[in-house]
Image 1: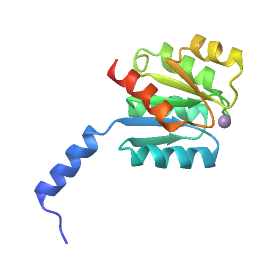
Image 2: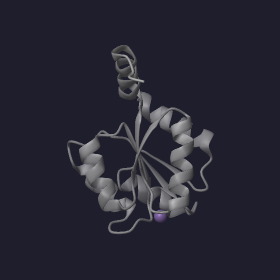
Image 3: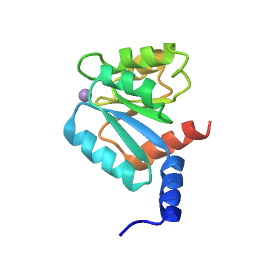
Length: 138
Ligand code: MN
């Protein structure tokens, strides 16, 4: 069946109006679980699997928000955040740092790197969604 032009236009508009989230996460299980849950909430999710890919996809895809794991191969999340935040093209994209440990220094380090907010794993989805919503409306 060929979709009518009206259906195609509607789908195109829906796709365009979806909030685009770039998830930078090297752990496949965390990545799959979080991306599926975000998609179910209506977000369009782009995936990068290391810090270097996170930086290049952040520059190319201009996501509305970035969820950045801190412990990443190639370049870590702190460095990737610094690179995105010092680039005028990507400096305004909000970044939420995700770390495995709620260690005191991690939060300060993430904020010093330029992250707009910080959350710890395992992910509490309602908590993360509310942090995302706060940054997206700002
Ligand atoms: Mn990691």
